[in-house]
Image 1: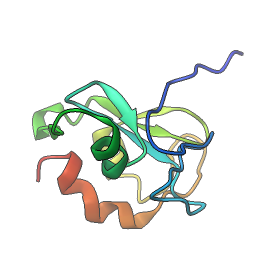
Image 2: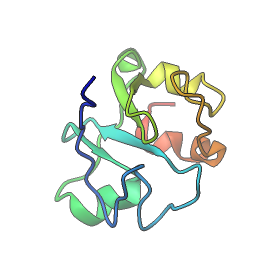
Image 3: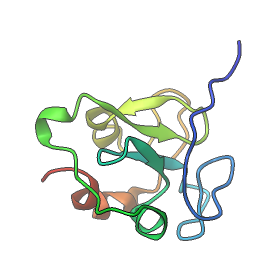
Length: 109
């Protein structure tokens, strides 16, 4: 089975979507920014590279696949991600629970 490659933009992004700004073993998600339909590891990478302001996902869009697991490369809906208790529902890899502190930068509250 061929692994689909979903491009992730950012600064010093590795194969598991860790970036210059967030590099712990659990920093393995990327978020698709609604404004440009592009995955970035974090809001800081978007700020550094994109030439526009971010647009957050509204609550009625939370069934959109917009979160990428850097370990298994599966896409999660925003709702799946928010309800997964920081564990990928596909491969069981741990995500950084501190990312919840940044939800307001990506998702409507």
